[in-house]
Image (tube, rainbow, N blue to C red; front, side):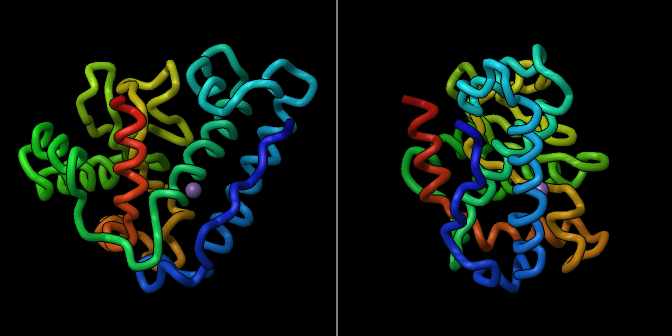
Length: 203
Ligand code: MN3
């Protein structure tokens, strides 16, 4: 069973003005599609065709660079679309809010730490909020299309929130102003989905 581009649950223009329609169209339809196509090509005829994407990531050191880059790209973008929504933003509640306060002091401290992880990631990569082996929340970043599920990641954990800081995610609207993109991105966050992932990762 080949990997497929997940269906986007909202229209390209519905995250405006924070993320513009053209960026969404190209990012989803061209970039993510290319990761899916190239991943399928890279695993064609191998046992990995029977694996799920999480298992492929967790054993990534055993696989080719093509599987690492495109498998990571597929997992990361699938997560990214799901944790955004039109009219999102605000702040988390319940167990997720408690865990954020416990790990980072308060929500603003968390936002600042996460934004800094994204802003200071040199070149292309991702910022992450993950649940570690101790079930506590942690902030980290990864280069390229790596992610915290991968056995090569410096900080390993189960991702509940990820932010794409590749230039292709923001350049049309924000040019070189990555911090402005990160600032705006909080307005489209789907905290219900982040909370769902947190509950799954901590149960
Ligand atoms: Mn991207």
